Length: 144
Image 1 (cartoon, rainbow, N blue to C red):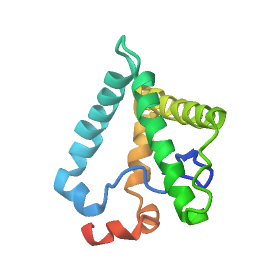
Image 2: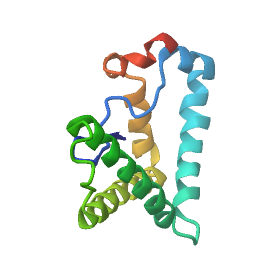
Image 3: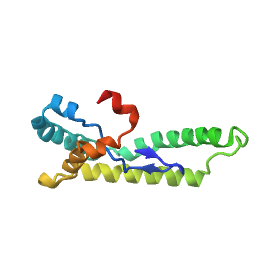
């Protein structure tokens, strides 16, 4: 996820995770389509299905991250002129709730297995697409 200018999360990256041709060759194509595929679904199910709620953990973590982002954003934009202004509590609650909803929705989509046409297979194909890898963050290029 990337943080947008207004503090909300953006889940539309060109590459959901790094699966370059070199990494795929190291893991082998059979393992990518078998072991990695199954493990992504298993991890998502382990996070989503237990009796305790992942939402409370996400709420605590995301609240701190959004408050930190707001402080850093104020320092960058206002150059410490308006350091008394904090993020509004209702806006903070809205940002945290929308981020949690986005994350939980993605986890539930990933945890569902519907055969070969599942969300995980589309994530893997997107991650190894050469055109999408070209749109990846340049900081990751030396490690291809």
